[in-house]
Image 1 (spheres, rainbow, N blue to C red):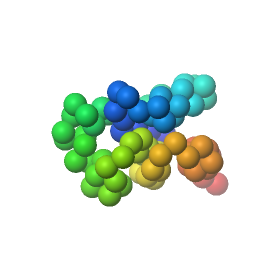
Image 2: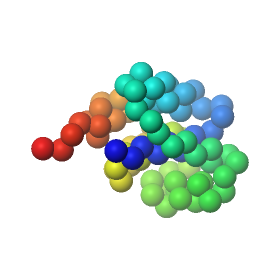
Image 3: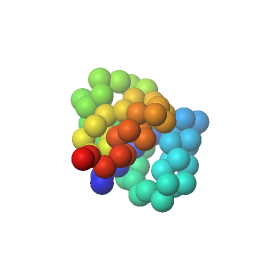
Length: 78
């Protein structure tokens, strides 16, 4: 499972999302869009959003820390 999270250093909801993944024992790749222009453009292209967090789980885009949508995206596909 591939998890990416687009963040900024001052984003409270980004921290909540990262803590959620850590509590589940999940690894993720973090992109700080305030310092990485390429990641910022990638985030905007994928989500059409400028706000963070933007979370990508196996290609599925979730805008904001939406725990229910994140948990649904994390469930194995049957």
